[in-house]
Image (tube, rainbow, N blue to C red; front, side, top):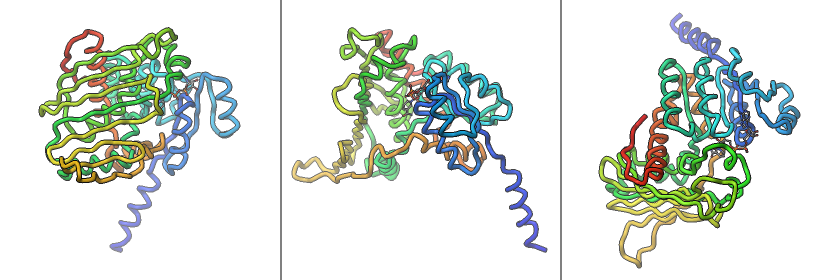
Length: 350
Ligand SMILES: NC(=O)c1ccc[n+]([C@@H]2O[C@H](COP(=O)([O-])OP(=O)(O)OC[C@H]3O[C@@H](n4cnc5c(N)ncnc54)[C@H](O)[C@@H]3O)[C@@H](O)[C@H]2O)c1
């Protein structure tokens, strides 16, 4: 008799486990969300949406059992859909997120969450009305095995006390901003569009809060093109524990896409290189640094989705929480504001 309740509990939980119905909006990088949900036994992808007819035809052939639409509102207003993955252009994220939340759907959104501070506030407000919903964003560098290892080393004290960080987001794909949608939407920010990844890295690795930023930018690389915003931004960050950081969002660089990272602590220094990183534990030039060869970036665009789904099902904490998304957005927006106003800005956490 004693064994019965346990078995019954297991059966009851299994039958109560909800199969989440998923809709994906935007089938560029969003196409890489689909397999991550399909591989998850708790999920069923039911709807795909793209404004591009050629994309709809391509995906109708690939996924004949899914509803395919040009109209995002069909996904956002469908009462049978539980989760929306948003991978449309940056300037429509805010409206799509808020509609999804207001319609009681969990949201996984490509970075950046949105483009403006008032949009962040509106999203935060919509989420607050429905605290049972989960919101996350695809800050995928967190899944870089090399950066995961460095974070672990920071946590176990190998670096001593951190005092300075340097991070570069080297985009290496100038044509994507001069010829694609990034140059066509009314506003684009290289800090929000790319810098967000490495700023998230710094916050996630160090667990420290940025209090103040200064920034400058230019658009020398994209001069005389359709792109009317800065393609290069350099910023200095001051953290509350007095640690400093410099970051660059460098979209015009003549080099392949990559992520520079230097971590300076009182006991060790890490310098990310290509293909390997290096860990220095000595100031003596004759001491060779340790080679850190864990793969980087080594993460697929759908890798954060399993943990996002687990967070919806209360199996695990979200790997990228909504609060963390709001925090990194607040820092990025402060950098853009500091650049626009040509003065140091205190970060206002939204
Ligand atoms: N996490 C990452 O590392 C990463 C990498 C690349 C892009 N992104 C983000 O993903 C988003 C999409 O970028 P991309 O590179 O896939 O662009 P893309 O042009 O390759 O694909 C975007 C797709 O979305 C469709 N689309 C745009 N607006 C739409 C709307 N309102 N409704 C339905 N479909 C719509 C377009 O037709 C296009 O097929 C952007 O926010 C971008 O910043 C994130």
